Structures are given as C-alpha cells and as structure tokens.
Length: 148
Image 1: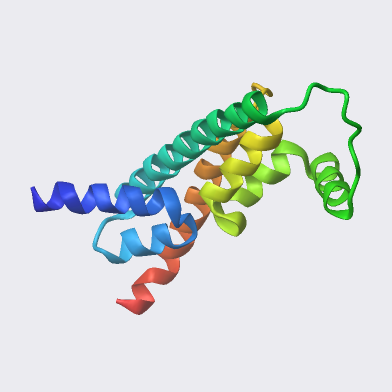
Image 2 (image 1 turned 90 degrees about the vertical axis):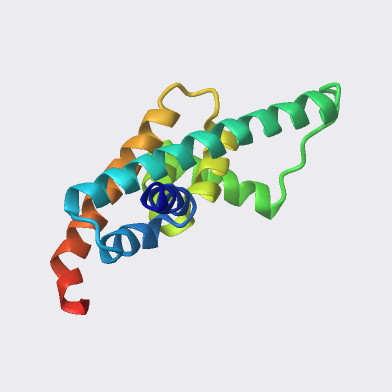
C-alpha cells in the first residue's frame, strides 16, 4: 500500500515538475523502465488535465465576457509579441518547450489558449512528454549512479 501511494505521488510530481521527475524517480530506487513509465504517465496526465481545464476556462471566458464583435482590437506590444511567438514557433515549439523549460501546466495552458481547436495540439504535447521523458531518464540513468 505504501508503495502504491509512493508511485501515485511520483506520478503527480511528474505531472507538475517534469524537469526534475526522472531524476527524482530514478534516485528513489526505481529502474530505468519503471522511471520511464512513471514519468510518461505523469506527464500525459498533467498535459491532459491542464490542457482540457485550460480549454474549458478559456472557452468560458470567451463566451461569458466577449464583446459583440463591434469593438476594434488594439495591438499593444504584448499582443504583438504573443502573435510573433505564435507565428514563429507554433504548436510544435510550444509542445517541445513545455515539459522542460515552460513546465507542463504553463505549456498546456498556453497551448489551450492559442491552439485548442487544432487537432494536432494534444498529440504533439504528449509526443513531447514522451521525447523528454526518454531523454531525461536516459541521462539520469547514465549519470545517476555517480550520485548513489
């Protein structure tokens, strides 16, 4: 029972702090394949929860507080910056940066805000989680024994 709770805690940790999850799981005594499985499951759980929650929140805000469409949009420096990032990086850039540099919650919310109607968004986010999990778990497995 304690082991199940420990694994659930590590999965939840992986869904929020993905960058540190492989090293935490591996150094907790799990082997390479167990670490890979725990971090992938946690990352996919985090991406799914935060993406769908963000999509629901942004849809609610749009439906509840949007204007009638007659208001003219103003382009501030912030809006121009967001448009430039969205145009140059796209969903692939957001997906690849999400697990490690942005964090899964922030990356999933950004993806939900700007790409929620693109059917490729969730598969790209999940693919990025699998890629980073493989990379970070492999690096940890190679370097981890030095710290034991």
